[in-house]
Image 1: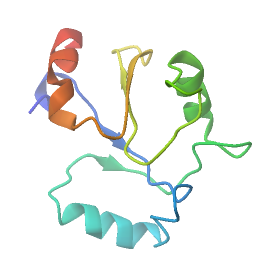
Image 2 (image 1 turned 90 degrees about the horizontal axis):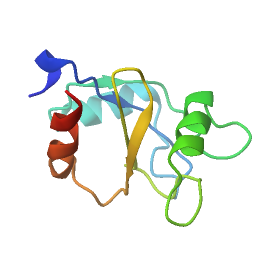
Image 3 (image 1 turned 90 degrees about the vertical axis):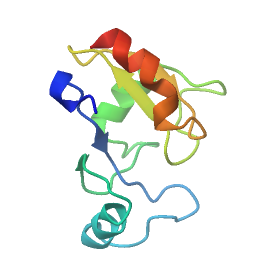
Image 4 (image 1 turned 30 degrees about the vertical axis):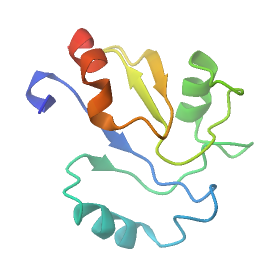
Length: 107
């Protein structure tokens, strides 16, 4: 929908929340493709703790959550501008289409 205008979506599976992603990356990717996922899906990572991926340490430092800077559950989202600066953070319950206005404002 917005890819032609420059939007890139990056997915990072994580098994730190109730062990919901125990499968290896190929199985996770196949599962996501069953839902029509067309964005880049990366290897499984940690988003919290000392082994958190550096990009998540950066995102959390720039956009703190309601209860702290940690990621609370799968499907948390960050919206970054064209320079990679995080401009907004969304709770896991926020649906992707619900952030369309924020995306359009940045494109």
